[in-house]
Length: 81
Image 1 (tube, helix red, strand yellow):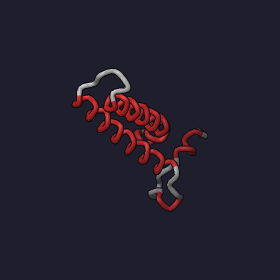
Image 2 (spheres, rainbow, N blue to C red):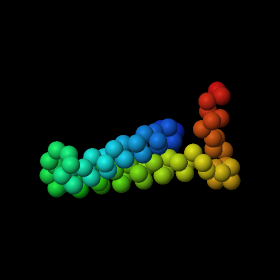
Image 3 (cartoon, rainbow, N blue to C red):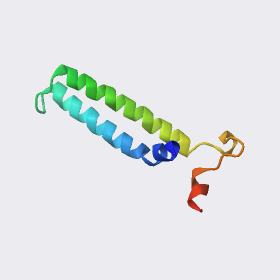
């Protein structure tokens, strides 16, 4: 169940990570509203975690047939039921 949500939300993780990175960059360069340095660092860290979740979801979505364990069904097989 958790894998299915990770696969579904992987692109959303990437979009939010890019938005956080852009917002942090604007705050760091002085183009946007003032942000304390700890918040900029925190936003970069959260963006990195979200990017890792995007990579993990993409890997799960595109894994090959040989990577499935015996008896494990693919997520698209669950949709047919």
